[in-house]
Structures are given as C-alpha cells and as structure tokens.
Image (cartoon, rainbow, N blue to C red; front, side):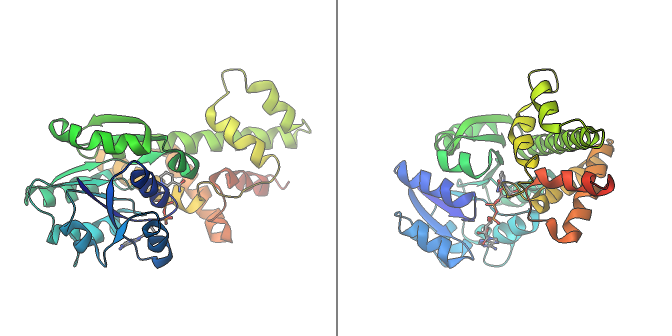
Length: 290
Ligand code: NAD
C-alpha cells in the first residue's frame, strides 16, 4: 500500500511522521522544502509535484490551508487528477468548504476515483500524539480501505455521512468553539469591569453548567494575556467564512458566526490575526476600555 501525503504544515508534518512510524510507505510534497526534508529524514520519499505523488500512490492524503489550495492541488495544472488511477482514493483532511469537497469529489468520480473529506480537530499536540478527532464524509462501501490509516492519526475516526459531511461537521465544531470563546470573553470582561476578579469568576463557575472544554483550555491563558497560538484568529476567520457561505447556500441563519467573524476581522486588521483565537477577548477589552 503506497500512500501520498501533500501539505506538510503544522498539522500535516506530524501526521505524516506518525504514518511512517506505523510502517507505511510515504511519498510527500510541499512548497516548503524544509518541511519536505524533515519528513524525508524520517523515511519518506519526496516527489516534485502533486501529480508525481499521485502517480505512485494508492491513497493520496492532503492537508492544505483552504478550498483554493485543495482545488489547485487536486484539479489544477500538475494536480493529482492528472495521474491518479481508477480505483485509487483521495482523502482530503484540510478544513475547507463542504461545497468544494463535493465539487472536487464529483470531478474525481468521473475518473473512477473515490474521495473522502476528513477534517480534524485537536490542534498540533493531538496531531503529534496521533489522537486527533477525525470527522469523515464519503462512501461507506470504501471506508474500510482508509479507516486503519486514519486511526494511525486519530483517537476517534467517525464516518458521519456522504462526501461533504466531514466538513459540515468541522464547521459545526468551529461555530460552537467561536460561540464559546465569545461568550467567555463577554462574561470575563463584564466581571472585570464590575471589579469582580475574573480569575475567581472562572474558578467559581467552571464546575457548573457553564463549564466547558473551551473554558478550561482558554480562560487560564487569556486571563494572563497569553495569546500565543494554538489556533490562529486568521484560520478561524477562514472557517467562519466557510460556515457563513454554507449557511447562505442552505438558507439557514448564522448570526453568531457573523458577529464573531466581524470581531475577528477587526482584530486581524489591527495586526492580531496570528494571535490564538482566545485573543478574541481583546475585542471586548478595547470596547470596554480596559
Ligand atoms: P499550515 O499553513 O501550517 O500548512 C499548510 C501546508 O500546505 C504548508 O506547509 C504549505 O506550504 C502547504 N501548501 C500550500 N499550498 C500547497 C501546494 N499548492 N502544494 C503543496 N503544498 C502546499 O496549516 P496547518 O495548520 O497545518 O492546517 C492545515 C489544515 O488543517 C487547515 O485547513 C486548518 O484549518 C486545519 N486545522 C488546523 C489546526 C491547527 O491547530 N493548526 C487544527 C485543526 C485543523
């Protein structure tokens, strides 16, 4: 079984290394030569283009920033579609628009290539540990062919539905995380402005109904002004834009995503786009003049 891996960034690099550790043969490609060299030093073979990765692979995995990158690497000039053989499989693990996942899948299907969208949650630490939450969309009949590979990178691998369902699930995840961070920021700044110690507010409420994974992950950091990423505000803007585009195409309301993306865009325009998304509290602090 030959695996291709395209996109060796913060997430893709440790994911590729885990596949090598598990004994899979990997052919890799990235625009960043240093990232390629690092994964080659762990046992991968490099190929000069996406097309050449696909030519020698039974299954191609992609871990790229957003929809345009996936379209370019899969369907563009020198893309994997030019050399993938009938019966091979593409698993796109990037967080992209579900509509684009469906478009790319339809183009691949014309050549007899199966596609899964399999975005992840958990960030770099879980990519390193191989314990990502992986949410998958695609044909149940072919799932067994990719499940073991995904389990090397994931602590949980869930087939949610047809192609696009993986990225719908990821958008659901990102909407809820955004809403949680905004609610936490609104609450802690209110407490601060009322001269109530926000650290004590956090400790008082974390065991109750307002307690959450997001609160425990972010409150201890933002209360100390630590906005080191983690997950960058600019990446969350990308996900919320995909959520808004999808909501619009489905004629479903998304006022929370709209409010939070506007706050995040304001911060990004002020040069804070590379702060962790917990840095959203800075929008409230500025408005509250604290
Ligand atoms: P990244 O920017 O670190 O990595 C992307 C990689 O893709 C880069 O190495 C880049 O050189 C490469 N690339 C871009 N265009 C290319 C092309 N045409 N050909 C070959 N390589 C190309 O991004 P990341 O943090 O690894 O995130 C990847 C995806 O995973 C994104 O969709 C992101 O939203 C998602 N994600 C990220 C995190 C996180 O915490 N960073 C968590 C969960 C999901």
